[in-house]
Length: 216
Image 1 (spheres, rainbow, N blue to C red):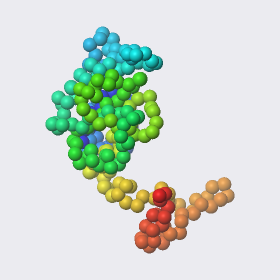
Image 2: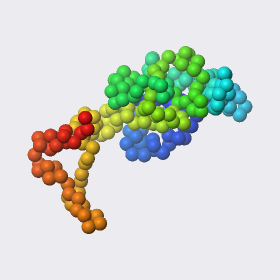
Image 3: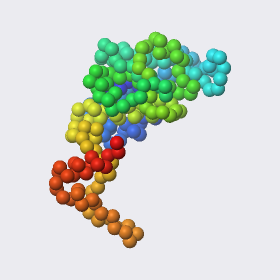
Image 4: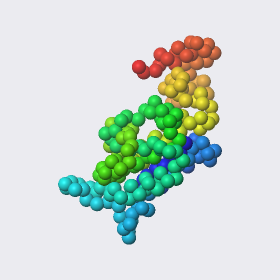
């Protein structure tokens, strides 16, 4: 699985991709993340890529041409004949675990376009047909955090990334309350114990207890 990220701020991804499971997945070549900065495709001397919006209003809009050139360059490197193109927007279709599973089963190359400022010139969407996706009912300063979220969620569905595929919480009964040693935790004179059922060894009763704790 290769993620192709169109972003003005590729360095924003360094800390998250450079740690833990995703770092290992990249090193093991289970996933790959490539970046394309529209500034590198600007024909202007100082790599400017934004202009005031037509019709007035606050903020600046990212120009279409640098983004189009970035996506076109990306598509030349993509192995898949029809890579999945995702346009991040608060008004898009809600991204879910099911969305991630479908992407893994149907696509080996995913192009994610991250907006900034007041957004990207809408004509880019007409040039490259993609799916408009939202990660939640809120607005962020840019698409980089949503892109990282999507990389994380999708990567977990790629076999070998988690090591043990049974680690997928959504494929089993995953209780929001988990415990480990010590059996009795003492803090400020109070004792906090692990629920007895988890110490019983009775798998059926433990599973039933986990189910009862999951919010419907």
